[in-house]
Image 1 (tube, rainbow, N blue to C red):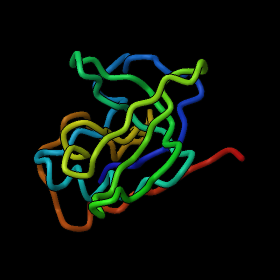
Image 2: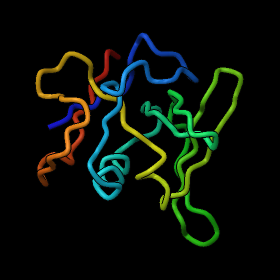
Image 3: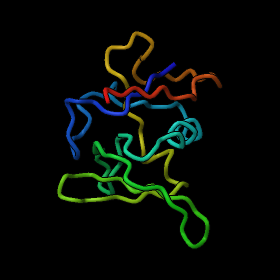
Image 4: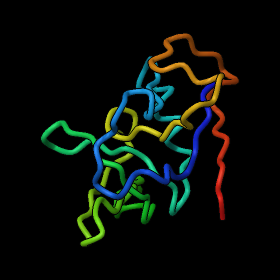
Length: 125
């Protein structure tokens, strides 16, 4: 089971992941979609940019458009750079942040159990 943390204190907005183990990488987009769907406003994630790079970002907003399609808007930098991701892209373009140093987190694990989809949010607030 992967553990999710809502902020890695050594990352700032716009940073690329230093190691793949800092991202929760699911074996299929459907599993990733289920995990990403649990993100709340002000949670952190890695977001894939149009050039293919991943950036550390904060979820700033979730909303429905005029066609009732759900979107997530991420803040990518302290200067206000944002990226909006449609729900159909969440599984491929958003990766939850993994808790570093937790024994039950193995980078790039491909075995998935239905119980593995829950996210454990941890905060130092």
